[in-house]
Structures are given as structure tokens and as C-alpha cells.
Image (cartoon, rainbow, N blue to C red; front, side, top):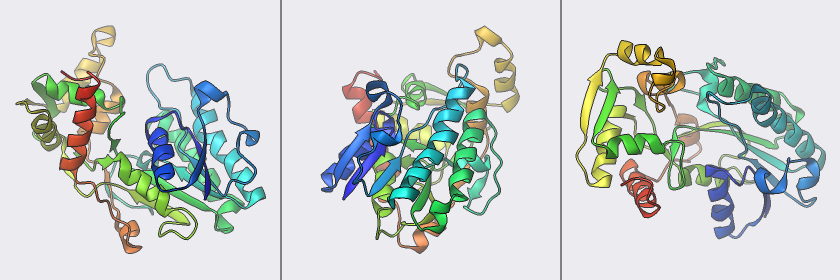
Length: 299
């Protein structure tokens, strides 16, 4: 099957190109830094499936206009193109569009908290109400807390643990549901025409819900070191944010929410069509830590 991957320079997109190719699909792709802006002309005419793994993350230096372009406008352009050609669109969104909640399902109302989540919600809502949805040509996946080899976004967490001390909000920290990157790739493969997830909206997550404390201990074990967990009241972290330039670079308001409030998705809908994760947290952490060590990113 001929598949086009947008955002192939990213953490998930780069692995998707390899993963789908290993399954025997003919894969074309777009890397913005090498190919320039993505347009309809970037997509080969005989493409049967477009996978949108492109996106712009938020942060202190994020440009709102770039967030809107990448997260809100691009999905609509791809939906327009797929609707005209009859190609299927697989769009990777985020559980953050419904805010931070425990056991969140696909029926929850939108409640995004930051610019990244708001612009992703705008893009998701636009394509879910687009004609492509009624035509049966759209699958939206919301992968939860994705990690794996090549992930630089969560590298600070692993480095904190490798350093031997890990501050945790409260006694245990938030409950989260880490998802190994290859399980996201498996969900994309299951969303191809004829697949179990083809058509609709699905949460995708790993098999285990864990606290930040529990995750830190598992990371330490994978690295082969001891880590001292330092429980701190949330107010300490909030005060640290008021330090401005003196605030640790690894701390931000979004990370305070991420590690301080329970947020994990329910995958009952995906399981109802017989799709379940296969990568245990232990196995995924071992693979991730091994990649970090080989590349000298943690010592």
C-alpha cells in the first residue's frame, strides 16, 4: 500500500517511516527541515493513505502562529486533499485536547489548557466535522505520554533519575500511562484500510498505569542505578516557577501539570475492536535507556 507520512523528521514520524516500510508498504514522506513547507503537491498522486504525524510542540519560545499553522491548519489541508482523492487520513492528535483527567475516554468534552493543546484541539475538531469523516476516510489517534528510542522531549526525566535524585510532587506524583513508540506505530498500521482501527477516534496507550515515583524507580532500575525520591508539596514547585530566570530550566507550568495531576486515558474503545498494546513498560524502558546510553545522552 502506498503511504505518505507527514512529519517524518519527528520522533514518532521517523519511526513510522521505518515501521511501515518493514511491513512492506511503499512509503513516501516529508521532512519540513529538508523539504520545505508541506503542500498538496508534496503528496504523490497515487497515495492511498496519508499519516499526519506533523506537529509543533508548545513551550516558552513557541510561536503561536507556527503552532496554529502546524497543529490547526495543516490537518484541514490534508483532509481537503484526501476528500478529493479518496485517500484515507490517519491523524495523530493528543489526549491533552480534553485537558488532564484520570481514565479519560473519547467522549470527554474538549478542555485544552495550553497553546499546544488548544491548537491541536482546533485541528482535531475541524477534521472530525469535515466531510472526510462522513466519507469513512478518517481515523484520529490520541497517543498518551509517548516515549522510546529517539525521544529527546522526555530525556530530562531520564537524566534527573540518572543523577540520583528525583523530586516528586506529593508522595507519589501523578498517575500516567506511558506508551512505547512502536505501539503507536502498530495503531497506525491497524488504522490502514481494512484494519481494526480504521475509521473513528481512538485513545492509544500502554498496558500499565504508573505513578511518577513508580516510573522513576523503573527508569533507575533500567539504567542500573539507585535513585532517591524526594517528595515535595506542589506549592514548592509553584514558588520555584516565580523565580523567573533562576527557575530550573527543566521546570515549567506545563510540566508541573504533567507530573502533578493524574492524567491517563482509557483504551477500552480500542480494546473493544481487539487492539491492545504489546510493549510492557519494563521492555520499553529497557529499549529506551539502551538507546540513550549508546548515544551518550545519559551517563
